[in-house]
Image 1 (tube, rainbow, N blue to C red):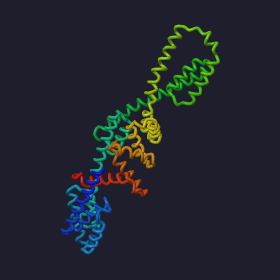
Image 2: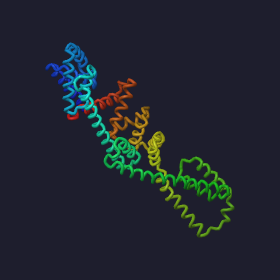
Image 3: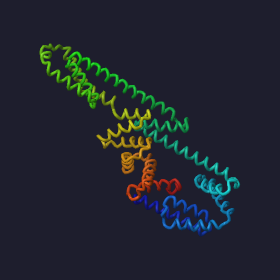
Image 4: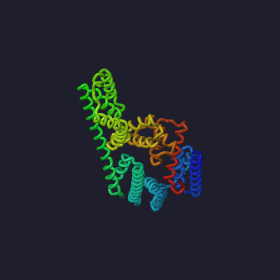
Length: 383
């Protein structure tokens, strides 16, 4: 952080020196533009405000036509260099004074179009890369969300369509498995209730034990199992008089194997909370998906990958509450999911600036990160 801060100060100092050179050479407009750039990034840097005030007073004394000409020239030069932002700033100043000045409208339209095309390609490339990364991590819901964003902007971008089709097939398989598991659980419930109604307590206990392995948090299953066990204790005569056959033993061994080995694995695969979370994510039920991840992390805070998925959900929901902010800070501090750091920095910096929290060390660090990213956008070669 210290190294980053030093680099930012050096960059601002370079801009400051450049502005002084423009002033000395009589390039008032260029000097003002440079000081304004510094002021946007660091309003209290050295005597930038004073310099700007002095130069603006000096500029106001110059003929309006000469100012227009200078800004127009700057706009044309920036346009040729594909510095879309610089061209827009200069040409907008011309248009504000004289909307019909030379070709200012035409050039301004070119600059805006160039900026839009450049931004679109950057966004598409980032969304696609994020989708591929998520797909490689087998986070199908997250990958699908990124690829859908790509398709909404440009449907035929690279092989997005085939990737979306592949993900949808995989998610459909997961959904069918989940539906089948629910049907199986419901059938076990029906069998358990029928056994209890027929007072076949041994059968009821065996079925309810299976259900408890599949749904350990179901309080209803726990209560029914306790009731069946209690009734089983009260009917010893039936057990003593019952003759055990080879078939009974075979069923018992098979049932025990299923209860102790097969069913736990079956339940693990079909009832994995992360699978349910991905389905909710795909269906657009972000709050429910977030709640599942929150519960998992409450029990297993060491599962770092889930913090990334949770942060993505918080961003999609636009959450800025304390719980979301803690997750955002964690990702920044541990340098996880660097692809969403710009979004997180933007959310945190906006939150802190809005609430006026300027004395906190985390706030200063976040604002420095936001400043660094803005500087890199303005001067990519130096970054």
